[in-house]
Length: 296
Image (tube, rainbow, N blue to C red):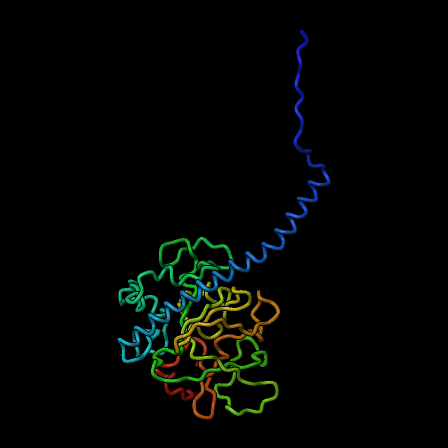
């Protein structure tokens, strides 16, 4: 008896090499279209989280002011001293025996080590470093956000008008702009651009100079960060946080005259703009911001 065999019919056919390559090409195109959008969405999420961190910091600053006659904290506990070699009292307090204890804001926020970390940077320096910060974790920077030093003692029940020079490149690196500029000045090519309030905390540039000076303060030649697609977040005393794009030169690895830094900010007093910074290594006295008269 002859045995019958059954042949199996194929329900489909195999992809040819050309068809497979076409599918791969289509997938590659879709990925190239979708990935930038996903990357932008991720960056936007981190930027929003960063802004939320700064709002929490700002709330703590305002809570402190409620407890201390409507004035924000000093940069140094010794109010008779204008020079603050140990850095910001909001961050750490150095006792007479040189022991360090948590600063003033630690009484108003439990998770300082998390809130003061930008989700984009995560307290890292631009150069690889194994240095440990004050929280005992492997983060070279103590804080991604630092306090604007010379607004110490600002009153929360006052209105301030602050601006920055439109062309900081008129002065060389290390050269201080004039301490006084007239409000209605007629200097060609030089105008004042107003800020939306009085900045309290900013995202300080890691390169200039947060990774070199761990004082928790923003002053002198300190610059703004650019980590959020060329912008940074700034927290203002008036209660809002918003992005800010600072003026920058062409080379981000070098400090250039065009780079906007703390020396280029002015506070209005009557008919004149008074430079917020005093001089290198010195701070304005506590509460000076409330009556910003020039100092010789």
